[in-house]
Image (spheres, rainbow, N blue to C red):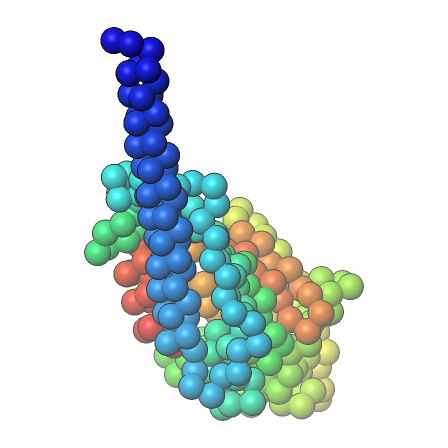
Amino acid sequence: MSKSSTSTVWKVILAVLVGILILVLVVEIGLRWFISSQLRSQFEEAAPDTAVVQEEPTVSFGPYPLVVSPLMGNIPSIEMTTPSTLQLDQEPITGSPAAQIEIEDLSMSHDPVAGRLLITTELPDDYVEEILHRELNKALDSGEADSEVTGILTELISITDVTSNPAENTFDVVFTDGVLSLELQPVMVDDQLTFEAASVSLFSFELPSRVTEMVTGMLAEAFQQEVTSELSIQEFTVIPDGFRITATGENVNFNELAGQVSSSS
């Protein structure tokens, strides 16, 4: 074969390779755009009709090429940020708080499972106040407390304020306009969120210790339910006007997760 023929063959091979690379690049861009568009659309559909969203959700897939994902059967990495859609002036409060979401090894199937899921969200004081009020009513209605505790808490049933104190990493839960005020501190014990009573402020009566124990236990349960049983709380930090929660889980089934979120809302 002559040098000119060899040169021509290599030019053809190079042209084919360049064409394949361009095609792969186009497909990669198309896949990223399509999946990002689908995720954004689902976010918009989930937001309340009256929500005014100031920011757009962002989606990133990291350095991993998506064109090989169908062959591998999973998406190696997804990072997503979603703005808050909370309607704090609604009763009950609607929408969802802002969140940062990291997903690893998401299976591409009708029953998607994430190898690892990490969510960081910030809950405003008013949102937490409603959560606690709801959980307290649920505990009383279900008869989880003994009769003495139930009688006392019935008198204090109105949670009127939740105020975060980031400097001390504590927060105050106020019942019935100050009849009872608990200053609580979040503590992680054996990877479980618990609360310790830093101080108790009473008005006109003495509070049995088991009432405080029930309230702190109820708080821990309420926050855990807020992130569902598929996830476990990794960090809980008191911040100005709210709380930052980081939750994580492994082999998280998204259909089961969605079902738990729907049943708890």
